[in-house]
Image (cartoon, rainbow, N blue to C red; front, side, top):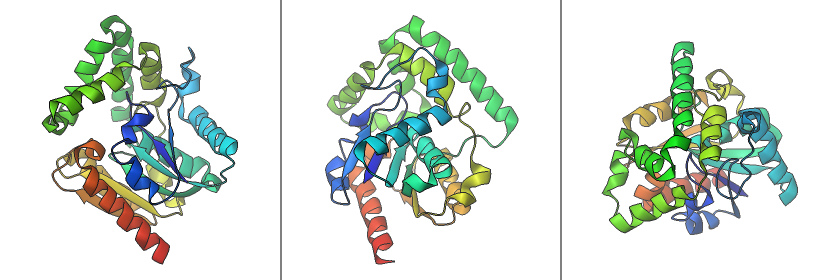
Length: 253
């Protein structure tokens, strides 16, 4: 089974553009992470921290009676996929990591990101969802996303607007890239096949993808041409081609 984990401000519909193609590889389960979509939005930041999310996702596998799964994660979901591989290796058959990182290696950078995310989390309620989603999608990280047809971009915005200020604020506090424990020193423990993808136009995460592949014992790299951070929706056909080719190689090994 392929367990699909979305990014921050999204929900399980983030995979709609590629879901049918992924089903050709195997059964897919798209999960709403805590604070997003139809999942609970508890008023306790502890429920959003990596260790709690690992247990939540382990519970999803148990409920489905799936002993081991491929964790396919985008951005925040990719960080959670790595957490699963390190903390629940018995539940991990392999990884597909999209536009993601293993966290901040330097303490000063991590501390600054935690501070910035806390400030942003505090503002979400006052701004309201419309203002926050507009702000989020205007970040330089998503510049290439704005090349999409207007109707498609509006659909992506509407999906994000259905999330709650509380859920997103606590997600930043508990699951932000600064709050989540870094795993660079533990990548060597991940003894399963892993595909790491990034968009060619997303220079920061393309560099992080190369670093991840260098640290993962069975890491494989795919840089998707003419795509940015949101490469799943920017270039779904190329994304699927890379993922399907990877699974064919794994099965042939």
